[in-house]
Length: 534
Image (cartoon, rainbow, N blue to C red; front, side):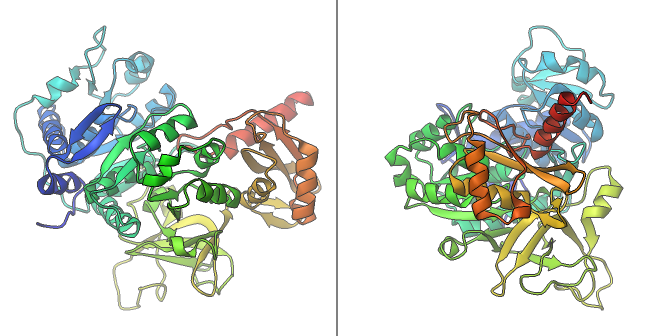
C-alpha cells in the first residue's frame, strides 16, 4: 500500500486497512472509516457540482461534528482548500476571514445562519451556502442542504499534489487582525506522521479532540488519529467536568490540551478509571506550570507526560520525551522527527549553549506563508543563511524557515527551554522579563488558580508588571498581599508584580483556548483610564 502523501489519504488508507473500525465518535454516534471515506467522496461530488475551481476556499463554521470533519478532508480531496473557523468567533470575525481569503462556499448550520446574514451580504466572493439542515427561511445566497450536497452525481476532483494548499488556519490575532497561515498537504501529512511516531499512536488508541479544530494542535488530533487508524472522540464541552466525564466514558488513551485547560482540570477530582486507560497526556500552546504537571502526574500516575511546543506556521516543532520530565520539567525538549530547530542570534548566527536566541524551525512542516500578506510573511518566513543547518554554499535555491518570534535557549545537551514571546516580553527596570516566568512562580505559590502577567507603561520603570489572577477555588477573592509576599520571597525585586488583581474564573481565552493576555492588558488599561478620568 502506498504511503500517504495527501491529506485525505490518511482516511483512505485507514479505511482500506480496517473499513469497519470506528473513526469518529460524537455523543452516541459512531462513524466507521469506510463511511467517513464515502462521505468525503460525496462532498467531492457536491463541490464539483457547485463549480468550484482548483484551490478555491471552502470554509466551515460549525462546532465539532461529522460535517466539520468531512468538509475539512473532503475539500482537499476535491482539490479545494478548507478554512476552519473557530465556532467561538463572532460574526464580524467570521466576515473578516471570509473576505480575507475570498471564501466561495461556507458550510454552517441553520442555527448559526441568522447571526451571519449581515456578514454574508458583505462578502462579495461568497457564492454558496451549505447548511446541515433546511433553514426556516431561504437565505439571500444560493443554499444547499448537507444531504443534497452529498447526493450530487459522481465527479472526480481536481488534480492534487503534496505541495498544493490544503488549509488556511487563522491565528488568534493577538497582535492585530488574524493572519491566515497557509499549509500544504505535505506540511499536514508530515506533521501527522511525526507526531504519531513519538506518541506511538496506533489502532488501539482513542484520542479526545477537546481543542478547537481550527487550532493546529486541535486539528492534529484528527490527522494523527486517522494516520494511525485510531478512534477520535469529538467533544464540545462547556465545563472542565465535561472533559473528565468524556475521558472516563470513552476510555480515552490520549489527551492533548493547552495549560489553561489542564489547570482547570486539576481543580477537580478525577475518576480512578481515567488513569486505567489514559496512556499519555500532552500539552501545547504554552509551557505547562510545574505545579500543574505535578498534579496531573498524581492524578494519572501511569500516563506518560509529553511536553510539546508548536506554532501554527510550522504545525509542531518540539517535544520532551517522558523519560526526561523528571530531570528537566521546564524544557520543551528537542525537535520532533523530520524537523530541525535552530537557536539564532539577530545576525543569523547560531547561539552558544544557554545563550538566548530566536527559535527557528526548518523542514517539511514549514508552512507556505500568510495568505495575502507579503509583509508579514517576509517577517516570519525567511531564507536560511548559508552555513546554518543543512545549508551549504553550493545550493542555489533558497530554503525558507520559520522565525518564530519566541526566545529560547538550548543547554549543553541540546534540550530547549522557552523564555518568552518577543512581542510579549516585559521591559522593566532595564530587564527583559518573560510573563510566563512570572506566571510559573505564581502557580508554584499555590495561592492562585489561573493567572496572567503583562506589562503596562510606567514613567520610571519603563513597564510595570501587572497580574490578573483567580483564587484557587475559582473566585475573585485572591489574597493579593499573600501572593505579593510569596513573590518577594521567590523573585528578584525587578520581577515582583506591582499589583495583583482578582477576577473570577475562568480568565478570558482567545479562540485557541489560551489565556488572552492582550485582552486582559487592554481591559486593565481602560479601567485605569476610567478611574483617572482619562
